[in-house]
Length: 200
Image 1: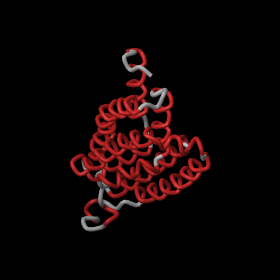
Image 2 (image 1 turned 120 degrees about the horizontal axis):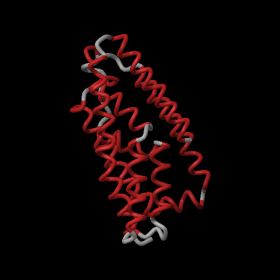
Image 3 (image 1 turned 120 degrees about the vertical axis):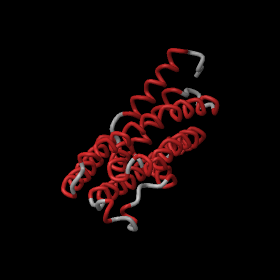
């Protein structure tokens, strides 16, 4: 593919924006984190999502895509593992205790940079985004075009996922009681499961 084609590049940029800003497991968890822990403590989570996904595109584009083409069952197995892990994460979000009660509890900590980066590999939406971008916008699968796709997503992904974390922090002002916070967390868990059903 030739990225000198402005129309195609605009198409890639539009796909990166729409797929990054729309609801999905990453965005649901970032909104929940913003609401429960604030934007400052959620920054490592945001960076892990953005950098982890960008790296995922490079690795998948550099050769892993061929593995799934040669062995389709590998992708099916990945979907099963991803679904199980996301359901576990939904439960963790739903049962997150109020910050005043969880200062030293593991369940009360926001996702770390490395946890968020690793999560991309079991995120069905991330796989859908990566595989679609690489098959539609790289053509010959040349490394140069793979790196351009990764760079476009890297530039767009961080500010778009940041919107969800800021939205969560904005919602935080209404979560003034344990009851309202529990209702919010259960709602986020339900939306996370819903985003899973749409992605698989």
